[in-house]
Image (cartoon, rainbow, N blue to C red):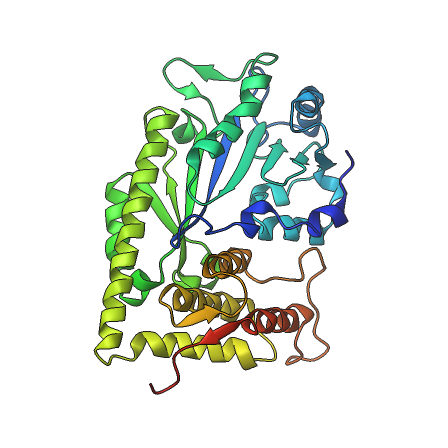
Length: 372
């Protein structure tokens, strides 16, 4: 199937639609699986002819696999800046792939929950996404395509080191798993440094979801497995799953503590929620950083019952806010760089964010008042 830009951009991936549907803290999970063909130079060292040769081998085989017969396919040289930017915003391609050109191909499944990159940093890179914390479905989807291709191709591997990659310290299972967490209470309570130290001791990594705006922007974080971790995929999955559930439990404990302080007359939590609600309600324009930070506090307000929906259920509202949080509210997706006729002129994305959130707020009620 040809690469239909409008179809992709006009369809919200299920990961965004159902983010946070299974847990207030765990917004979703992601996975990355890499493989390289034996006898071919890795993409970083190969020539354009070498990359084309790999693509000519892999692409027909991938298109024959179940689930990819009607997928969107394109060579990276065919995609303009706006489309690359859109795919980066959706976390569907890596920054490395966004810079690729000839001989590098992108395949997006029709449901947009699996993305295959040919000749990124490795010959075959698969990204998959799942809402909630269902690692089993995620790993099954990641393993499906390689298990089919392994019947036709020989992947570079050794008994001692496992699957070989362009970075020696990432050899092994060739899999990295990620969980996106919303941790506003731990962040507001200045407990993230302790969390970071604990995560490192457990052979995992934690990073901000929006690093371009600072470590705490949006109170959203990514906890992920270190490439050098040893063990089977099942062991790696259980290790990560156990840790993120402990973090979710700790986050909820701190939220309860903040609520207890609120009942004793501390206005800290109510003030943060009210300020964000007021900004989103009345602002005419919103930068992406303002949007992310305010949406995070709005979602915390719903979790703590300061805000309730007048239409639909609380779970639906939390899910919608989770999708907005990880999407980042960039409604210029697929367009060129926003231009300003003069320095203070608002761009279309800044105005669109304001209109979008005000429509959502019309379906909510704020139960706290400034100064209460």
